[in-house]
Figure 1: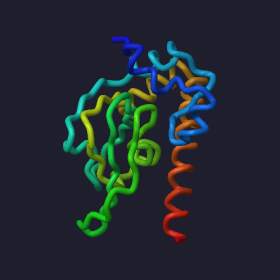
Figure 2: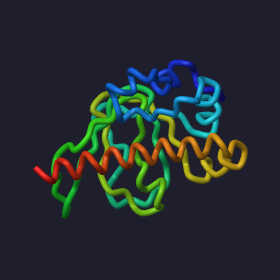
Figure 3: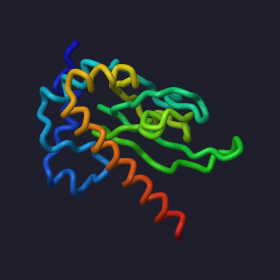
Amino acid sequence: MTAPPSAVEPFLCEPAQHERRKDLLAIPQWRQADWQTLFSYAREQRIETGSLLIEKDVSERALYFVTSGVLEVTAVLSNHSLGVIAKVHPGSVVGELSFLDGEPRSAKVWASADSELYRLDFNEYERFADAHPREACNLLFAIGRIVALRLRRTQTRNAR
């Protein structure tokens, strides 16, 4: 199944847009067809406002691409919520840490608005990488940039 253009649109950012929203999953050399190819390996998913997408400590190796709506990431320590630490908008991803390292989920993620996503399971990523090695490398570097950005934000917040 081919992803509709509206699903791909948030990921087709111009450099100026990327400068305003650094958390976009930017792969400048990718065009609509590249995103549609990636999403053909993923599963479309809808989540309603207030619904939980990711539960902390659950073992699940999947990456979620946000195509519409808004997700909120909540830090949890010893079963106590530390509040919202991030909002994730269309054109970005959640679940990147567990996707990369295979460890249990480190936070809770829920929909603060009705949202549409594409879920890429790790085994489907491997199929994508086998068929499209250059694009798989591009994707991993883009995800790595998001991880680094989020780590720097957390370090800055904790230093205050």
